[in-house]
Image 1 (cartoon, rainbow, N blue to C red):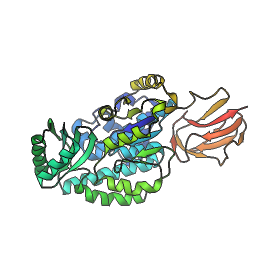
Image 2: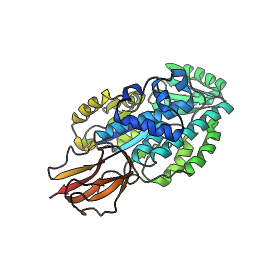
Image 3: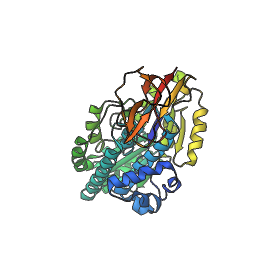
Image 4: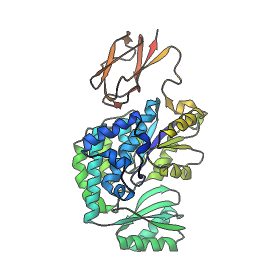
Length: 395
């Protein structure tokens, strides 16, 4: 099984957009800039580290960068069997699976970042990473602080993040060291994320979530809140709202992916798409025997293809076209945009030149004759030029 993982805030870095300027997937930056009303190209190319640390910049640039990488990967015909994202990355995962549209995703991330920034201003807090201590002992350290401090992220075995008021985090950090923590590292953040300190942001975000169309998906997303796989639209309204004040159970999400994997088809494969390789390290610490790779630049795409080809079990990776029989053919997108299929039953007879759908204003015409096996792209999914749309069984 192949899972795509998407990073959260903190993975951004100066100049992360430069390698992508001449790549076809850069068009997502231009589209996102129009939706957000901001110059994302400037942020991705020229912004310094301090500018990118601002929650409002960090979240939006990370979200768009990750989807730009996904777009490039999908142009290769590679897709996943499940998705997940760390905190902000959960929104990327939902956009990646078509649960939310690209434009809606940009708007939600803009609202989420603004809400979290404002919450951090109104109720200041901080976060710290506790290394080398079991989860329950970190919880004990927070309890001994007897103040406003909570576990915010269960990232990996021996890697837990706590958050709360400055004094409470400092006290819990001292208790963690006394309990045997190898190291406690303060994090450069603007608030106590994933704690009750984000309650005002949660309340503000609820309205934006309620106004967003969320769709059922063919590919499940593993949620930060309950570490379960969800493919029903009705689940996400509550999950996204709860995420802001609930701990990110990332270690548990990885364990869920491991349980979802059929061991007879090979090791669980996890590809981190987006800036940095933080999640790749967490996967290695959490799941023994997993195969991991991080993709953040165009140069990484060739490595990804080699990594896919080296897999002993091809069915886990949905590489469209690679394992089709000689009598089967792919119909690909003529342009980039939102895909709307024509109402056709499975096994419908298609002739050369028949319209099977639209991508924006462009007609998708089949260059082959045959019977329709299935649509690869989902209705209202944003697709890239030359991305597989459907497959036919030719005569």
